[in-house]
Image (tube, rainbow, N blue to C red; front, side, top):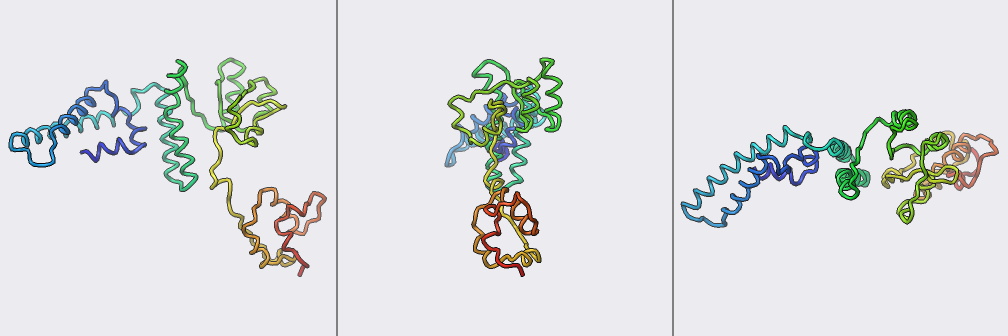
Length: 280
């Protein structure tokens, strides 16, 4: 029984699915915690004697009965007793958690960080400001179109999540207000903040930064006959495996590999240029 209860204490998914286990206004939950305290108080390291042993057995029996009722109450109630905004936060955090469980390493850590930050967000904001924060989840493809209809009618959200390339259209339509990060600006990558500027004004801020596992990925290249034709030395390439590359290199590298003459070609961004000799 204690191991089953331990799942509620140690598994974040259980907490997000069945928060009613901590609803101390529910009789079943209160009875369980009372029985747990009584049984714990009677537990001893050694044999306490027949009378105390019988009392402990009776307390454990009551504890098991009350646990079954509390567990049944928590599972049948789910998040239904929470305010809608809090229930939505739990549901969203649970989805993120389950996605994180299917990932590894840095990506998993990034998703778990978002779960930990999102679950208590609405309650903390309300406690600090007295204003209830309502989180509405939409399909990403719906957000911009819905906002363009709801905003002019005064029905739009105060904050929305969207792509930075929406800025031009939405700012020109007068649907966005300028954002002033103040001393918080230093907490964000400058390149990420700049991506949310339009006409020199800041209209948004990054809510997440991709983990290293997504920002740094290996490049797999097979030059084949093209490499031979354009004079690429495979042995030389092996010596450049640790050279840092970006997407900027891809265009210029492919131009040269395909032997395409273009005024836009820049040798400094051709990843294979140092290893290109005379064509075969």
